[in-house]
Amino acid sequence: MSKTGHNTWGVGQCAAAIRSGQASSEEIVGACLARISARESEVGAWAFIDAEHALTQARSADAARQAGRPLGALHGVPIGIKDIFDTWDMPTENGSPIHAGRKSGRDAHVVARLREKGAVILGKTVTTEFATYHPGKTRNPHDTARTPGGSSSGSAAAVADFMVPAALGSQTNGSVIRPASYCGVVGYKPSFGLIGRSGMFRLSRHLDHVGVFARSVEDAALVAEVLAGHDDGDPDTRVAPKPALLEGARAAPPVPPHFAFVKTAAWRHITPDAEAAFAELRAALGSQVEEVTLPEIFDDCLELLPLVLDADLAVNLGREYRTAPALISPKLRGMIQRGRMLLATDYQRGLAARERLNAALEDIYDNCNAILTPAAPGEAGPPDSTGNPAFSTLWTLTGVPAITLPLLAGQSGMPMGVQLTTRHGDDARLLRTARWLAARVAEVGGAKTARGKRAKG
Image (cartoon, rainbow, N blue to C red; front, side):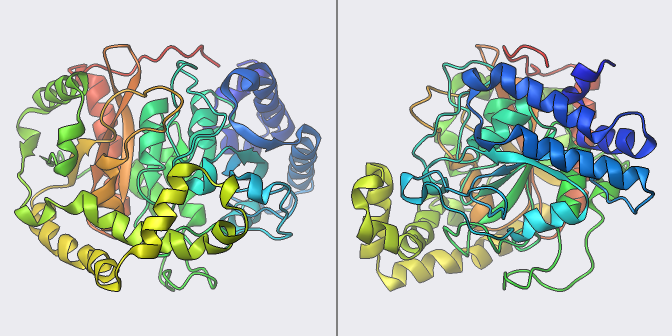
């Protein structure tokens, strides 16, 4: 492969090539920068990019390898960082003019983990306003007249357009799964508390998750395994052995997996072409998938998450709301205002739902390897909206791991994701099941596969 094609390599391929001397970090980073130079004006995935700084990091990684120093799992591999994670050497503006030019002077926990393992921090990817709903400049690389989703817009688009092999995102409702679905990449939201969040802009302690975008299940697992573990600054992480996510993703299931197909309260938002595509997928899987009806206690799950999110937003964005309300979008102002008026009893009801709903899911998880659902209502819509997160809401509220795979396409040829979830803490098995499903769909060819309009890298 020519050097100019190195930007199409995945995380594992880049790491192996650098380690073996097949390619240098400078060559790979240079190829990514060339792709960004060619496409950024159309896609708009980056909030901050400094080509010379990225190349300096790459040259340092190459020098370390040549000197025989120990190499981390991501040595020399470029990674994009959503612009809500602090970086000591780059601004972190959180998608808002209120924080324009903000420099924290420190690394978020996850950024420090990446650097410890040798990653090159390529730049900061676009986020929607404070990682909520007001869109930024990013467009869908498959069709720039469409949204990339949100809030991790730039991360999803940059990975989809071969600008970087992987990028970090976050999810407080549907901000990893939905943009990954719209952009046709793998999006992985680990179990709540698996990855530390100190140095990340806080929306809701109870709902915020760090997520990963990549172009394969194995690459997502590799990056997430580097990030996983205790964070002294995040009380929701704990000291425990790290899960073997990459080993899990690479393993073959002992028996063919069984899936539970559930519609959830979000099904009323499904588009006809998405419904038809899932019918084809279920037919292709045959007896390995069984439709399961959720109990009535799940009927109001879409209304529960906002009880927590809006109240937490009112607290965490209180200073910005008081000092610069005119610089906050009308939709976000409305969420903050609702949060300021919520009763404490409603907030506590929302918080208590996680335990109640997870208990009700146990019987389903006991009888399947993963729950199968859509990742989004259908194809990406117009760029003035980031789309509907309803198909992620339940799984974010319950804190269970979720992953979306780019396996389906809509009537316009745009990607549509297939989402899998399982019980909290069972991330390695979820990744194993996801990799099996991706291979199975490719093998049987029984469902419409994503075939977006994007030019190849």
